[in-house]
Length: 244
Image (cartoon, rainbow, N blue to C red; front, top):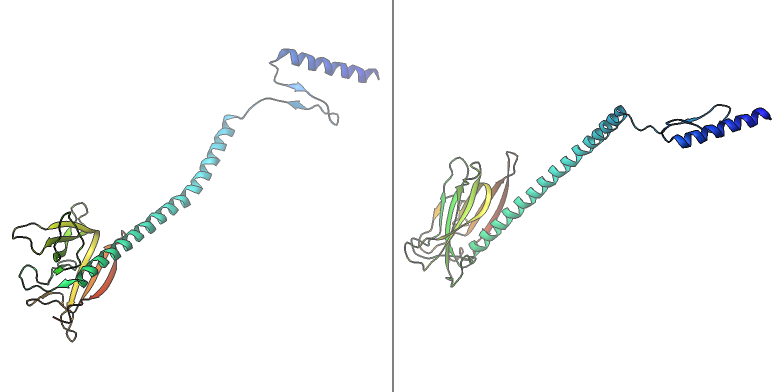
């Protein structure tokens, strides 16, 4: 009994001294199973911190790869959607204007298609139409002369620009047409006409007087950004072609 009381008194004295000192890093706690337990207030070592940072960095790198691949795939998909939308819209507008093509017996307004293929298929298409979209403010002639052709892109030498020129049919000689870019990143623009339903498609054709062809076949291809191209096609039947 005396030994037990003496041990308890000794432990109480040690706890009291530890509380007064404030700077002691070790203190004896209750014994469990006959062995004293020691508590410390020490933190992480530098090595442990470096290991933790390395593990976190590895986990981040593992996640970054799939994330970047997802971003790249998303950007490609968005670019593809833009190309498809732009090509289809351009062909739709040309088709609308071709549907309104009229024959005028004048050198400047006659239907004309010239094959300008050099290294890539390229056509120069000119015709008079009642279906042209307004491009300038003010009064507009009921019949406009439109022209579609390709020109090298000064910012991207490997690509072409699909350009449009538009001029009122009543414009005086020497008046410059209104020019605009219809589509960028174009590789080819090709047109063919069918002058006669029993004939063959031709890449070059000049109207004889007030004449328009029976149909026009259009093909437009765009660079896909990966050294390839995607082609879009449509065929337009001209209402006045059968009567000319």
